[in-house]
Length: 166
Image (cartoon, rainbow, N blue to C red; front, side, top):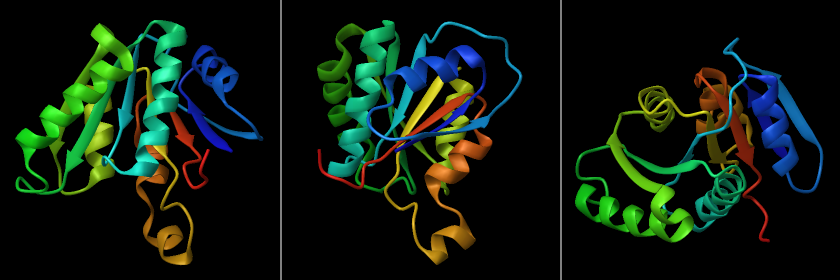
């Protein structure tokens, strides 16, 4: 299942057409006017499950000939090494989207805030995140990254079900 939060009807329909098996849940977003999907931001922590969301985002970017921004938010300057993250993400973005792929690495205390800020700064039309970490009472009470991104991003958000193996 995919959760779509759309900023405009055209973005909702674009994302919904790409939603794979299962129902789609929709939450309306801002009142931005309908526009072509030109820039897709895909957040990753470079895990196996995040790779599934990246692949989904790359498919969407290819279908819409959109730019693919692959983002990792580090929670501390030494978190995994910024230079290493930039190098790895640059290779991955290029492999996924060729010249349309670009890597972004940022630092923020809260990954959700970092993703939302990058979406604003980069003027993303769509943000794609994985669903892992969306279950459990603690996550419900405290809030999880995908949920907080979907409520605060200035654009359409697609939450890809990354809990199952393909």
